[in-house]
Structures are given as structure tokens and as C-alpha cells.
View: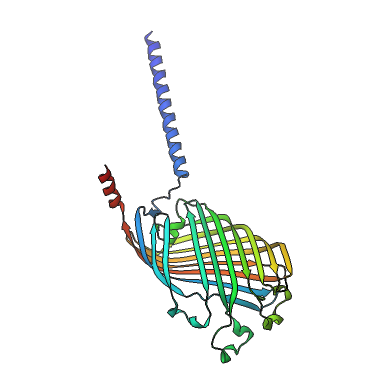
Length: 358
């Protein structure tokens, strides 16, 4: 009888130990799974500044060009808007960022000789560690011919200003969406250095897609009559709507040059399927589909980022090529930004409000 009691006690003790072991294994697996699928970056690599108001002095310069050329030819006609430097203030709090700037034309070479340009631009983003989503919308009216000397080397000998086209209107919309594979060690915000700070060098591959829509119109042909001999008749258009979409892949890497000095580089090339609708000066219409284009987005950031102060320079560029049959139309967008700012901790304000409400 005593032997039976001893056996039962040993059996029950072993069963209890097995249950405790199984629970501990489940807990370890649950913890590992939650860490693996966490939306929060690894604090050993990325530091996040929550509930901190960031105020910066900013200087910006936006660039754009519309380039027309014939397939197989070295001749191209480049239009650009007259868009000078702008200075102001930038504000950022958690997920919301806003820049307020005013034009400062005095630093732009020959600003008063490039005509007037009306431009509206907005850039929106929704960026989490795993998902990077960016949308750019821009409307621009009024361009000048940037490379006039390519067609008339003596232009400025008898003219004191660039030839302008106030009738040209361009509206563009670009959206890109990427999945970041190494999302625990590097994020979109940490590569810029505003809401987050990269603590260790890291990089990640990106895979996603992008969509580009572009509308271009003018009162007369985009190719002036005096330059017609350099282009084929297909470039003789007054209106075009182009839509293209496709897949992109890329890589971004942030290098820590010192504890607070960093360099971030990224590039996202892609291939696009495209369609186009064109109208000529005489009202002729042409629909084009089945062609392929390309898009390349690149960014470089050099900055200095501490827990209180931050600053640096950012250069971002998007180049889009579309090939409507035997013509080439290139849209290029670039953005240069200087910033110097400080973070203000708002946590004490929230604590005081919670205490007063309680």
C-alpha cells in the first residue's frame, strides 16, 4: 500500500512538472511571437520621441522639369518652373508634420527673368515600421524653356530673359507603398531623423509598388514652331494625360558616422505599365497603351541628431520616364531641405493635466 502511495505521489509530481514546463514553453513562444510581429522598432537600434513637440527653422527648394524628346535623338526640350528658395518654420508632433514657408527669390539666379509660376504642392505620408506610404500631389502653371541656348546659342545676346510659357499647366500625382523587411532595426522616420533617431547602423530591403498620373496642357503646341525641325510630329501636342503603375524594389541604409552624426541613403527603382491620351493642336486624338516606363526614387540625408537638438540637409528626387510610342516624356521632381530644430518635452504638461483632473 505504501509503495502504491509513493508511486501515485511521484506520478502526480511528474505530471505537475510537465504542465508547468508546457506553460513555460507556451509563454516563451508567445513572447517570441509578439516580439517578432511587434510594430514597435527595437529600442537598441531606434529611439522614438513620443509626446515631444519639434520646432525647426527650415529652408527649402523645389525643383521640377518636363523634358520632351524623340526616341533615338539627342535633342530635347526642357521646361522648368520659376520656383525660388523658401524659408520658414517646421513643426512636428508624433505622426503630424507641417512646414510653413515663404518665397525668398533673392538667392535664385535670374529669378526675375524666368517668368511667373503658380505652384501648389502637398506631400502626405503614413509610415509605420513595416509599411511606408507616401503621396505627392503638385499643380504648376507657368514654365520657361531652360535649355534655350541648345537651340539658339545667341539667344541672350539679343534677349535679357528666358522664353516663357505661362499657358502650360501640369498636374501630377505620385503614390508609393513599400513593405520594409528589416522593420525592427530601421524605420522611415529614423532614416530622416525627426520623430526617431537611429542608434546603430542598419539597412533594409523594400518591396512594393507605385502609381503615377500626369496631366499636361498648353494653349499651343508643347514644341514651339521654330523648334519643330528637331522633333517628330508626335511631339506636336497640346494636351496629354498619362497613367502608369507597376512594381518597385529598393534598399535604404543609415550609417552612423558618430554617436549623433548620420548619413542615410536609399533608392527605389521600378518598372511601370503605362497608358496615355494625347491631343494635337488641330484637335486630333491618340490613345496609347501597352508601353512600359520607369520610375526611380532616391533620397540622401546628412544630419546630426541628439535627444534635444537636430539638424541636417535632405535631398529627395523622383524621376519618371514614359515612352508614348516613338517619343520620350520625362518628369522630374526634386526637393532640397535644410533644417535646424529643437525638441520640447510635453510630457510634464500631460501629467499636470491628469493630476488636476483627478
